[in-house]
Amino acid sequence: MPDPVVDLAAWCDVLQAFQSTLEVLVFSIEYCDKIAWFYYQPRISMMLHGHLDMTHFPKVHTLEVPLPFLTGDPEFTTETQVAHLLPPNLRHLTLRTDLSHAQHAYPFDASILQDGLSVKSSQRMAHYLMLARRDVSVIYQTSLTLLDQATTLESLSVWQPADSSLAWLDSQVEDFATTCRNKKITGRILIPMLLRWKDAAHWDLMQEKTVFDREAPGFEPRTRFWRKEWEGRPLGLATQYLLHALKFHPVEL
Image (tube, rainbow, N blue to C red):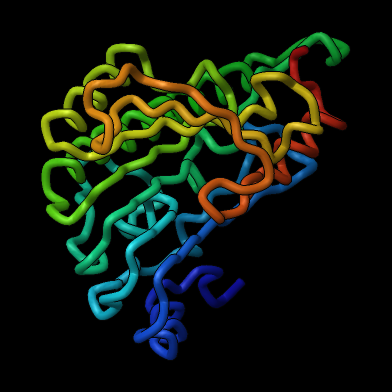
């Protein structure tokens, strides 16, 4: 397509009409080819331009977005910093895995292939999974940076990939929890259950792990499940490819 699929500056211009009333903003995006294996998914690099500039939205207190919307970098380059263009009174921020290499990955069952994976496909899958782990690591590092820099935050929630093998390590979760505790910011890990339980019925089921609660700092971490909605926001966003893969592609069961 000659024009960008996602022009964030143009979207911000459209949102200006709601500058005095907008309080909660959720962006989710899925860019995929349903007939291709996850390690052959197209990248949106040339289709995404700019980043969100929410500095003129004083009433926005809750924001949920893919990380590239805050960095302008769909390639998840480790040196790229979050632009300081967050809403001035932001209290609740949620980072999504949308547009990362980790978004579409799933446990691949090569047994359905007559001759197994070719050498080229094996190499491509390994490279893709390496990039997926890098992207998740960038989201982790950015989370710590945001906890350190965003002075108005009361909570930071971070989505994990659908494939459990790509989720944060226990040591990373502990570091996240410790930083949240030190900054007195509620920290949550959000886990989509579709591929954890490998049932299409769970496309909108999420497990919430609160690793630190600023309202109850003395309590142990807790776990809850949510379906359909979480804090008034829809669950199951950006899951169409994985739902399709679970039904028709070789997700290893």
